[in-house]
Length: 248
Image: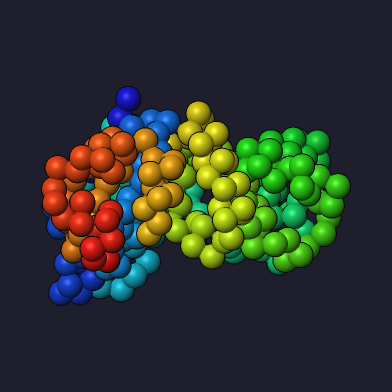
């Protein structure tokens, strides 16, 4: 089932066109990985899925992005960002306890009951594969966690508001291999209940976790297919050159 449909998407910042006539569909409960060299438009595309680009000056777009058949530009941005959560490259915990970090979104949406909040926090931390590591110290500062744990805490904070889609922008770029493996393990489990879109410069990571992979170059979607095919028999030689490390 198609979750997000992108049609003829063009994006400019001032006179610079960053995305050029992008057409693709993202299916429910899949991990779509997006690869490509720097300045290929990957992050701009990702940020468009929850309209973060609109915060930039001189932004304009044409084309359409529909989620479950509704144009996302017609939705209230706060509602959209509840439906489409985002995890950034650098962990950004709040200056609060572990518990309060995860409970933050639920509280802002009016949930006050302590038992209900605890249930939400526990579930989100379990889904982010962090619960066993922090369950006995939920009251300590989130800043006392390691970088990898902080990133999984940010994933839990996103999950706590029950999104439908989770966007990941280079979530493992600053993490060690063990922490990266834990984040990837969480992603593979999360796709049972969520739709995931992952921008990564690590082509091996894309190969490990992606159900399908899209290759962007200079603002264009060059090709998109099942990940196994992209990495073994891509249709475009530029995709092959990028995966082999001949540029990028």
